Amino acid sequence: MVGELPQVANLKINGIFDFDGLYRVMHDWFGEMKYYFEEILYKHKVPSPSGAEEHIKWTGWRKVTEYIKFNIYIYIILRDMKEIEVIKNGQKKRLTKARMTMEFSGNVEVDYTNRFQNSPFFRNLFHFFNDYVMKKRIDTLYTDQLWYRIIKLYTVAKEYLEFETKSNAYYDMW
Amino acid sequence: MAERDVVVDKMRLTYEGLFSVSELYKVIDNWFREKGYDKRERKNIEHVTPEGKYIEIWLEPWKKITDYAKNVIVIRIIMKDIKEVEVEKEGVKVKLNQGKIQMVFDAFLETDYENRWEYKAGLYFLRTLFNKYFYKPYTHGYQRNVLDDVNHLHSTIKSFLNLYRYTERAFTAPGAQWPSP
Image (cartoon, rainbow over all chains, first blue to last red; front, side, top):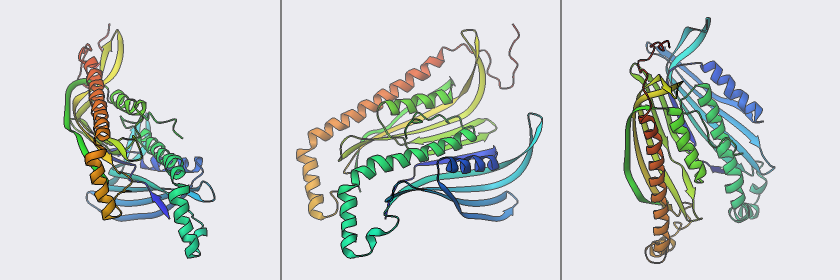
């Protein structure tokens, strides 16, 4: 049983950037925030003359309580991808030239151990518990917390890619 | 589905000249934070083109007023031909941007956003009846608040951009050298 969030943010870039560095920075963020990181998809299509295409899906999850679990999903699509070598500050660096889209979403998973799913009585109790007892708490505390965690990860990506709009006025939320 | 009343329909703001992209974004982001809106950035695109950067941002922050109604403001910003330039401001060299901005503002009052009144035909009928006859003064008040918010944001951005109109332009060609004193 999950409480889906709408898509939190969507980032697109067309140009030259350090994809390996971005991968490392975002992977480290999951570690620092104590999320388990899984790469559930890595699809590399046979390169065409315009470049390769890659589809990557990441999941980060964390148990918040015995009943609540946070899931963060990131879907990355790279098109017309080519590895290029540039000289930056007198040093050779391998960068990526591509069109990249990153979609950030997530959900708050409740009863992830399926304790309430064993009998019809407990299933009904589960609905009552979620809809009346826990509803406010899930909405205001957990969903809000997850939302701003994802915004923080999104800001990390924007900062690394040196976006002009990399600031975040909500930096102190959660 | 929740119901959306259109309060502001495609209010526009255009500007061409000097400004700072990052400062403009900060002004908008801070304004939403101060007014208690939750952040949602549906799209943020940056392309590097030969004429300069192309930046497109689609913001959709919202604020819950009650369990039944919430404000939603949608801003679409397109910035074209954004170049980095150096200008002199009170004797100090400052890095700014030059380019074109187009902004479109829309605002909505979203009612029954948790879809509580849609499960059954009877509830849906009741909701329509209540919205039309009993709840009207409240929804009118909420709509006025959204409108005030959009007008305030519009004038905040306008006055922020107007500040740059009077900046002394030292030179605008990218890659040009700063003149020696």
